Length: 175
Picture 1: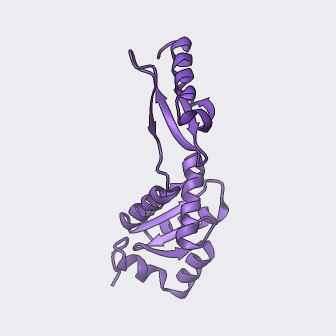
Picture 2: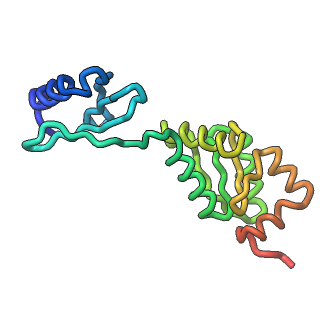
Picture 3: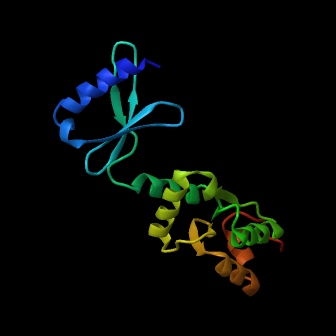
């Protein structure tokens, strides 16, 4: 990585050049040491890349429409697996759902939101926007939102969970 003086020269030229002069908000660093610059009132995240003869280049790291990419990720994940459980490792309700599904012979695709850092929080917000449910576990079978732990256990007690799992292709019919 380039030296601090090269970075400082680049930042000086960036902050004095319109339209960035009034929009420059903050400089911080990613854990790997690469600097970040936050710009504008919508706080777009831009990663600075210091290269040999070009002191600073920036590229946006996320779209301006917050959450759309995250919502698309949820939809793609849910559509790509017969059973998806959005979970947190410490949540007893999440553990109960995962245990229930495994006990009926299904290996769900599990996304542990608390293991994903800020992306996990974004996914949980996207899930709430898509389903109206802000808690975990958040269970999907055959691309359809089932609900949480209480809803999944209720389906099992009523005898309707396993037919849903068979219909979704997560389990073979036992007839």
